[in-house]
Length: 67
Image (cartoon, rainbow, N blue to C red; front, side):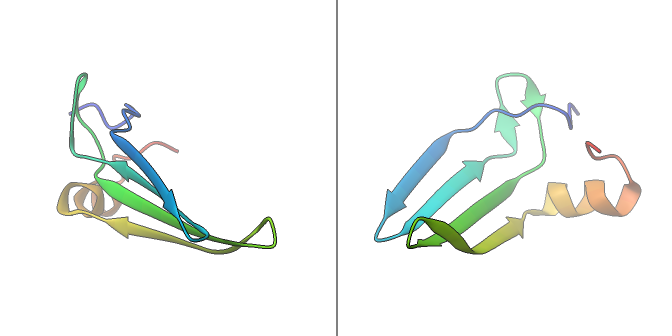
């Protein structure tokens, strides 16, 4: 599993929110599966959230994640 890959499938934005999806399956093999959400107010990041998938959680627990 290539945990250091960074293939991004999708970026969406609407109403002050930007969302990035890093799916598990990528052209270079499996990677950490996460979704990042940023809420922007007045041109600044107001909140930043990261949601981890099962593969990403397993990598964090085992220490096999990009540093």
